[in-house]
Amino acid sequence: MSTNSIIHDNISTPIDPDPALVSQSAVNSTCYQSFINSSCFKYTKIIIIVIYALNIVAWGGMLFLILVGAANKTMSDEETRKIWIEIDSQILNALFCVTGIGLIPWRVCDLYQLYSKKHRHKLLQRHSYTTNLLWIQIVVWSFIANSIFQIGMAVCMWSMNMYTRPAWLVGMFVGLGCVSGAFAGLVQFILRRDTKKKAKIEHDRTIILNS
Image (cartoon, rainbow, N blue to C red):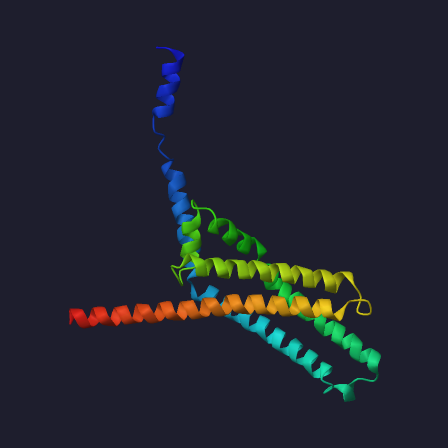
């Protein structure tokens, strides 16, 4: 037998996966899904989200009260007022960075899978609130824009002091970041609500037809 025929036989012979590796992978996947669907994970996630939201409301409310002059009686002078505005702004910027910058790996992954036909089914599974690829594209790009604006905001807040930082630049990044993030979240909420409504109608119709 020639060398070429031996190589051909080795290549054409199917290689069965190791049953032990397949079994271990299935076990790991099952454990992960069980953890994700567990009550412990669910309530832990809710608690973290509530704490995060309360921090945004509290520090944002404090910043608003200082800006409108409602807290002037507790401020000894204008310098103290500016310092507290800077403290509130830096804390809010850090909170927004948790989502705007912390979620960049997942948002970039969504963008890659959006334009990769091979992996697009994974994106559609995660964004199951709609089957319209155009809406998913809008949501993905809105989140990408939100991350870009948050990076710009972080650069302004962390590279300049409060005396030389242009207020219009900070306001622009804050406004664009909030609009892009809120728009993406609102689109997801509306599409998810419509999908649930259609599913309920189809379920009720099936029950009526079968009765």
